[in-house]
Image (tube, rainbow, N blue to C red; front, side, top):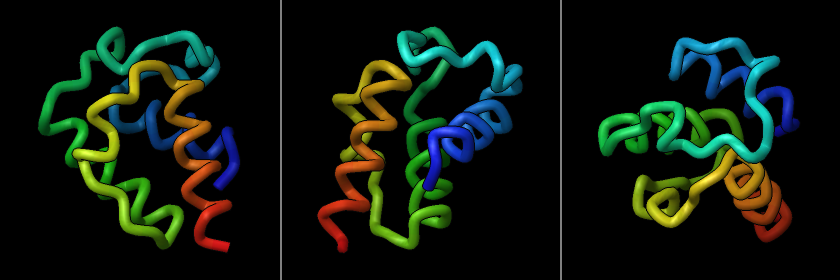
Length: 78
């Protein structure tokens, strides 16, 4: 998954412009709630082919942190 693909997923889920999604924006600022984390985990699982749960996302705060999480998950799977 590329960072751009991650931004596209976030932009679609949170109805925002992907160009406005800087790494320092928090999921809270996007309005993420528990249901959003479940949906986001599902979308990330679909996009990466890896198992991602909402519990995995519970401690993630910023988009940059989320990107590092996805990148690390993919590296571990290799």
